[in-house]
Length: 297
Ligand SMILES: O=C(CO)COP(=O)(O)O
Image (cartoon, rainbow, N blue to C red; front, side, top):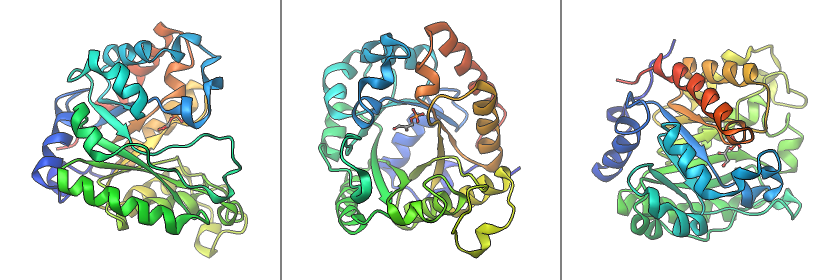
């Protein structure tokens, strides 16, 4: 088992450290791990994600769920944060997503435009900001340039920066796809190279290795792949994303392997709220049991 990064390991400014301390040690289990509830799917995929449980289309329901489930934070886009966060301000930490896009255009030039600022995050009382970086997209140059401004502003204002590091684009499709070990490993390293404080990755799939560069063609287990992804992020904390709804046993195994690899936490959305309220909380309890086994110092 790998040791988890503690805040002292991450080279953070005082402001960033104070805010991450609030998230990791004053909310959730308070043991330095994190369970986040992401709620930007209404923009990224559209309202189709709420057919499974129509209650989940109401941001008030999701904020209440975040509080009841003892989450370390909730990720919201600016519109919902402005209108709904007020009732929960201070009770559930806010991660303000600064960019985002709909799924409607073909994503062969994926770039997620900015529509909120780090100053908006400060005004709303957020404890972190989120930025989606499309690693490998043909629009990567413009993305990196846009990201640089966010990183500098986050640095200036002492705001932790969480990078949603998503491999995208045709070149990635020809290298095992967006959740191949090659792509996820590279994305984690890219976020770390570009100064993310925390990186959110998809769980890597080593079995997807068609056309990937040489070392990735070998047989790796999923545990070896997630171990390598966490190591690639070095002093950047890692969060592992949930993805579309899957069976509970698959999700629990993913959570266990991620935490055992040294990830700081989990950011699971649809697998939490695409089901009935009590069932959601029961599933969250199982995730919390896993996090409890892997405290950070
Ligand atoms: O972080 C996420 C979306 O922003 C992950 O959400 P899902 O768990 O629904 O894939």
